[in-house]
Picture 1 (tube, rainbow, N blue to C red):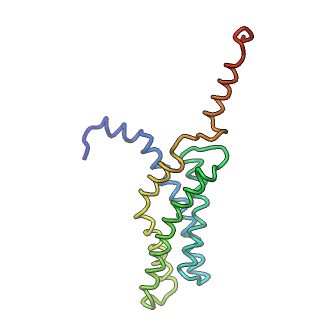
Picture 2 (picture 1 turned 120 degrees about the vertical axis):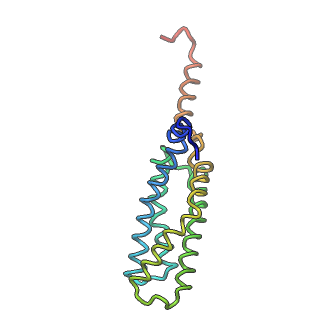
Picture 3 (picture 1 turned 90 degrees about the vertical axis):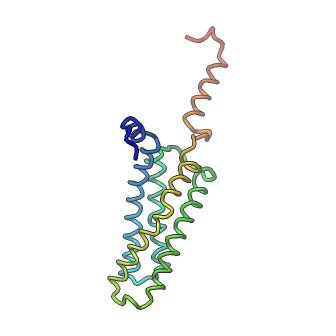
Length: 178
């Protein structure tokens, strides 16, 4: 345990701490969307754990992308397919497959041990939520390093616009500048 208050204050104000806090908050929102979908499909509509888990994954993935791109990492402009969307989909597909696999496996292990659909739904919802924990920190690190955390180098980025303006100004003879 660190007893140096200065180190703790710097850590609390660091980019990583701010990002991780926003990432966790955004993940709570997308998890709520996923859990609601899972409970509705599995509990009320009697869908299988695999179908309910897959639909819950999609229901959480969409707000997850939007929240993390625009709020957590403060990205703007058009979404880059190769730069952002494809790596994002690969990372969350992995975590989604882990969650759906664990949830489906537990449902099969339960067999007929829990006959009451409400209790079975509660167990499956808890398992589904907990199944994302093993990959939570890994997902954050991969999204920060590979998808959203690197500088935006697209032609429409703010840095690219500043370079174009600077370069355009440099082409004008100094005698015409104000």
